[in-house]
Image (cartoon, rainbow, N blue to C red):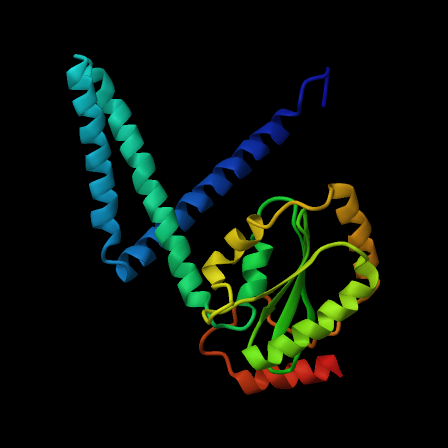
Length: 245
């Protein structure tokens, strides 16, 4: 920096990096669109339909008030936003559908939550890749289990008892991810947590997080994110046993 002015070379490099990052994002979105279009035959008709419908409705409103040529670009813009929204929702639904039932899927879904959520994946687990994840949020403490129901119920009960020793009167919720009665589907997990009542303050979150950190983890090695469908379960379990020993 000279004479109080930012270094021009640094500014140029920052702009170059920003352009490169923007180009990479556009490339990723285009690839995601191409992949989704191949798998989802209804995607294009829905996106085009939303674009045309929004444009027609807004243009029609413009005709009533004799402002149709002014309203036309507004209708197109709203239509594009609607089409993009449909694309995003269907991609998200597709991702959750592919991840559902795979070990690590619930932990991955929790890690992508936005807002004041403190997620500790795999605080308890088995060599069969059943797992309990701990979440601290405004509702209190939430224990989220994934895996074979009869095994995770026992695992969840043990972890809840362990957490209760330091939680005091703080609310503890437990969730089992799945599609059976009393369980929460993977795609609805984030929504389920955000609908829980707010019971504690951010300061209380900090306090309980420090206390729970001292408990450590009882989990074997678990996959970070959904395990690919073609992965060899025996190999993963063998690695988990070695690391959990």
